[in-house]
Amino acid sequence: MASNSAISLDFLILSIILVQIVGTGAGRIAIYWGQNGNEGTLAQTCATGKYAFVNIAFLPTFGNGQKPTINLAGHCDPDSNGCTRFSSDIKSCQAKGIKVMLSLGGEIGTYNLSSTEDARKVAGYLWNNFLGGCSKSRPLGDAVLDGIDFAILHGTTLHWNELAIFLSRYSKPGKKVYLTAAPLCPFPDIWMKGALQTGLFDYVWVQFYNSKKCEYSPDHIGKLLHAWKNWTSIPETEIFLGLPAAPEAAASGFIPAAVLTSEVLPAIKTSAKYGGVMLWSTYYDDQTGYSSSIRSHV
Ligand SMILES: *[C@@H]1O[C@H](CO)[C@@H](O)[C@H](O)[C@H]1NC(C)=O
Ligand SMILES: *[C@@H]1O[C@H](CO)[C@@H](O)[C@H](O)[C@H]1NC(C)=O
Image (cartoon, rainbow, N blue to C red; front, side, top):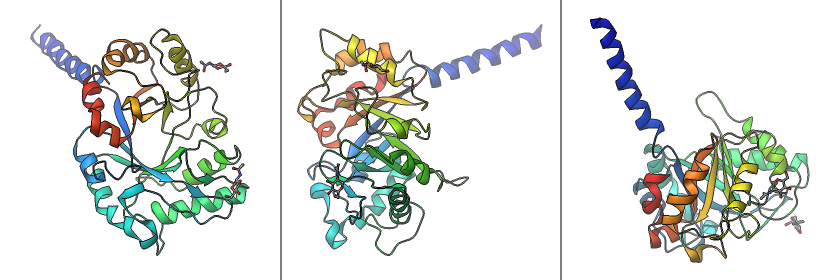
């Protein structure tokens, strides 16, 4: 009798703990940093405590024999090695448990992979210059990033699957190379389709903006929900809802925080693959405080 009630008390406490972990706020927020010199520094961005992932944007030039070059807008000048000072910021982010990724691609820039050999070469370059390898000219200094984000929005559609495979082979027990992707919401995405079929990506933040076909519209939430359902059919297990953090952050697709928390999130959080929300970008989130408004509902 006495031991029975002790068991049920343990069970009750366990249940309460589980509800606290799994219940509200189970999702996480990913942010893009680097494309506006007037946003907070990388260290400040991480110190807000709002984000679980920071994607450093971008490496917009690589592949096809081009010299890979990062572009962090007004933050630093890569040509004079000015971006290496972000090493300490990256380490301070990681010390807080935040995963820091280098994002490949973006809207501006020239990138494409010409062959399997090119994919292998780019993977080797990324490993030596941003991940656990060695190089005399690491653009972000000696900090070892957590992984690589694919934000491939134009160029050719081939060999991205091979780049993912080559990168994943650098993972070691205890030091994984994380892979993430930011496809546009029309499904399937022509650039990322092959890469995502590998099932190698840990987190996929789908851009539900700049695409009338699948983004939120006030009179028709069904488009977004249909596209979300399509996206949850890929082999990857954590899908994020990617959104602009301000109306000006994208041509279309902004969702007011109150609508997101009352209408959209409750509908997509029923999915077992829901991982959280991705926001473009630090600059806009600094202006609007969007992540603060939605955080307890993500
Ligand atoms: C691929 O990259 C090369 C080198 O930058 C560029 O000249 C070419 O136009 C690119 N191809 C496509 C389809 O974007
Ligand atoms: C869902 O996926 C199918 C193909 O599998 C496609 O024809 C359809 O347009 C997609 N719908 C949305 C809203 O993404």
